[in-house]
Image (cartoon, rainbow, N blue to C red):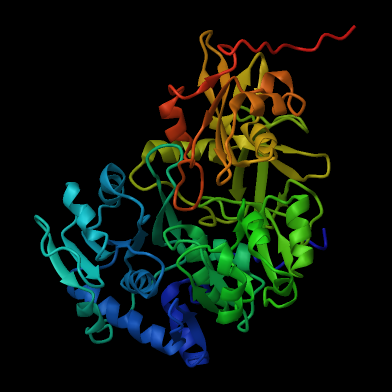
Length: 540
């Protein structure tokens, strides 16, 4: 137990330690000339400069009618303006609502309407998307950058220069409390319409501390995750809490990752998830192993490859399980050697695995992970304007994650699948992740997504959608035959579809709902129609 990260204090802090306005004021008093944010062009803002700019933008938004309890939309890529919009809104007692910059059409309309916001700060190259949707509540659009639209029906348009030119905030920053709403972060939308996760100041503080509670004022966090998700906002907030600094990148680039860390002096990253380490290994040199400033990161999953990667590049790591709603509920030891484990429940969190009736399952049996915290407001308190989804998630006083996990006798948890992704075929429960892992291990396969398709007889059939490596040609029959010795007969995919690129969210999650909607397409290979028989091995 001694090696589990111990930096997280689950107690609710007073407002001076977790609310944005007093955190900014404290930094202005204690370290005004210390760097706070380095941007893509190399420009560095000190805490004093950030304090001044945020208060000017707050006054500019106030003059546009933003006040306590309002929501302010940020349709912006990573950069200065998204942080300023967030900080300025919170200084007014308003709620920051970032939007995924890939959204358009119905998805964009859904987020804007759900937020109820009347003011949006948007990149000029994105505002044209507002022409295609009818948004009743939105009244004012502040454009950042050159170009953009000259007019939008029923909306006032102004340039962000108006916010830059505003004087410092002419009224005191509102005295917000740890339980007050500071942001609404929309989920990736992999299961349907995005849900707006309500995030209090203590919830954001929890997320920041759970992952980055170990940093010091000397650390710089390399933020390459989008600021419209909790990973990006939590990274910036952690720096503010600990008076460290951030280097803001516009995304993950394996080819320049180590050079970016060296150029920015970043000692910590906002996370290496999924295939990122695989891509990094391909683009790294021996020199990168000895010449890099990285001292610690977190990644998922823990495999032989990721353990070797951390050893070769000489940094510490930990892993865990978390979501926008439930920040890092499970955490591993530092430099864990338990392959595939999400760790154990961290301090201040209780976790159970339950069946469909919320009854605890037996040890080793897969069940849905449900979570609660020792203190209120440490987890999300619901979904914006979605009371039914909130009630369903918080059934019986526990937050239901929708994920299936198992737990071993030592209390270590292991992810199995999304509950909705679990497939039942031939009387057997199938983990889509296990089938995906077997497929991805094959030569010429870049990535794969496995889903359940309703069969002719009312049970699920397994469908694999496979993305080949560049210039590789995959034959479904050859792929199927290669899987036969690797998987039980009931896990073998009946359907195989080859796609040049799998549909993904901006955070690189595969959009399985899009694949389910497509179903069995004309180009999908069917094992049964191919005349290949698969059956249980008979034992004498």
